Figure 1 (spheres, rainbow, N blue to C red):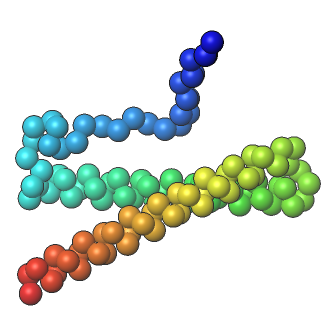
Figure 2 (tube, rainbow, N blue to C red):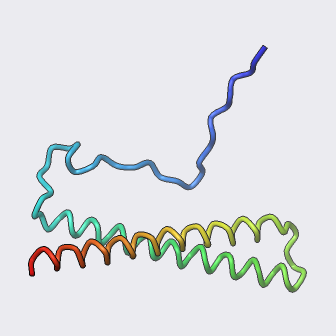
Length: 106
């Protein structure tokens, strides 16, 4: 009657690691938590730069006629756009959190 739904393959997406409160370590006031956040943020920005570079290369290939499949360029462009939106949202939330902490200290 009904067929089961197949699992979605997420190629290139790494699974999330354990959160600090799940592993039992106390991350409140810990410099390793801040270092891990900084590392995650810098790797996200590097990933964004790589996605934008790939998108730009494929767009140039599409304009010059060297691209065989236009879907590749569209997918790369969409990935870069969504990733940029995510990075901007994280930045906005970080600035908002910083401003809130500064208001609490004043």
